Length: 127
Image (cartoon, rainbow, N blue to C red; front, side, top):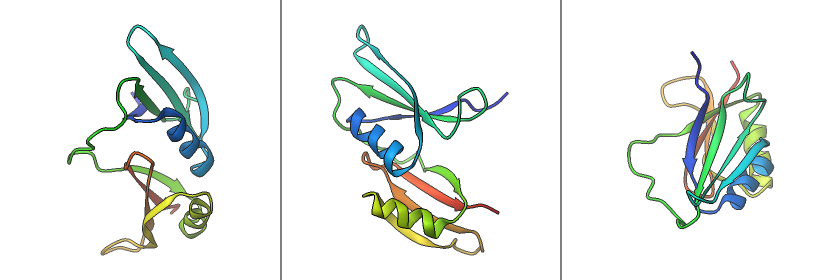
């Protein structure tokens, strides 16, 4: 068994694809419209779906925004250098909500950013 993907509902698919490809450096792996269901799915990631867990963006054509709720926490992405990653994300227009630094009560370097729909992404330094 393995985790295949994490799904996020997004209000503007092209804006989200731009964020995850340009700011987060993911690759758009595939995208398909489902006219009968009035939604589009886009799969993005850092490698192919056969060997990697990916992100599924779901855009329901009649919905522009969602209430994020209180149960979802964040997506975690490992990076080589959290300080460099946050600088690159800022330069590409990304929103940093917690600057790079040591985690509370620990030594791991982390940072938090926010995607265009308000979902939080934790950057974790490679150990």
